Length: 260
Length: 260
Image 1 (cartoon, each protein chain N blue to C red):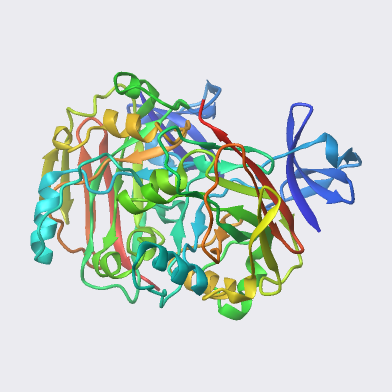
Image 2: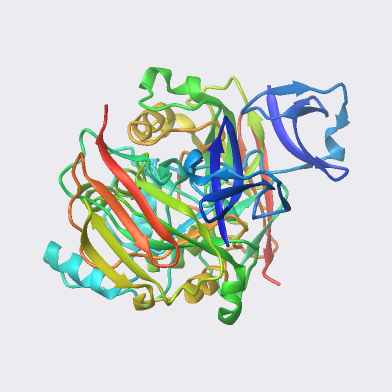
């Protein structure tokens, strides 16, 4: 089942995608909801970020190749994480599928994508055992953890390096019934594949991150958890198209534009 | 004017506090709203966290005495921030005035308060000039940035050290028409004053943080920005009562309880 959030004729609504149609839904997948009798052409709606999370969790480093290659680029020894310690991103940065990633005027060349699998929570829970972790996930979507590396390294926090407006594309929708270990992530820059990796290669899998985080933090329906990227990203420049595909979910496509 | 958010007879609503009464309001201070003809005794309502922010900004270090004393405690040289670089906290950790701060079972002795002035935004804006920054603030509330120092220092992120459930008391309400440089913060542990400082002693004032943050991040109505604490906090233990008073706003009071 595919849940989307969309805008159509001035209305914002959740919907269920069926083939090339969308069935608008009253309510949301995170609470009571009811299918309407309507059907809209998928091509006629504007897809929105599928959920504005209450808490925006992000694993950060979670694939060993990424850690090793990024450390090498900086001339440092790689430091693999030894525990599943979750981080955060900020809602102001969210951007919908097909939206424009705005490259700030004073940002540098090291402006990079990070394609990530995203868990979208459907239930509220704390002290969630590992073996029940996936019961709390409504479905899966795709995130692009756009990063300005000079700011990321030089600033005291990840505020503008990771969280400037439009730096967090998420979408195109939420797909239920998938297993987070069986997917392949493929990243294309201007149509050319620049990276591909298996979600099964995570250092700490989704179940571990959910279970560990929920030891201290109540996970709520509508929260999201981004699960990290692999490889060493290339730079994106104004005019580029960046696509993150995850098999079984779809493609998240965005365009790099200059700040006005 | 004092805005509160409250629960009464199963209903959650915004309200305006007038003396010892609350006038329930339809809508919210962040959008359209209308006073009702009702009046409730303030003592009969349960005050809630005054807003669940879309983005939960937090300045972190922002008073020089705090930086100097905390570094000394750790046997390190103090490093004063040279730029207003904003950080983040997480909504799962929010707790209302008079609520219980739950000290996790495996947390250590260095379990500490941090009393902070909080800006609550009422308007959405980007590239906000310093001299217009306060126009975007609806009003002011109080935050207690509860911190488990061992986790804060040893973990890769601030997840459980700063963002475990109940670690972010905020309230009791939002007061409009105040100037953020003229307030005094007084912290009391079990009724005894343990710290007091002027909000005017911030390293970077509210206007600077708002203006700098908004260069890259759109600030939205309903977002909050916590503005840092001064001094070197003492430890809190189970059974303690912690109060943060800020003149002109009121008192944020919470109780330390053990995790069940």
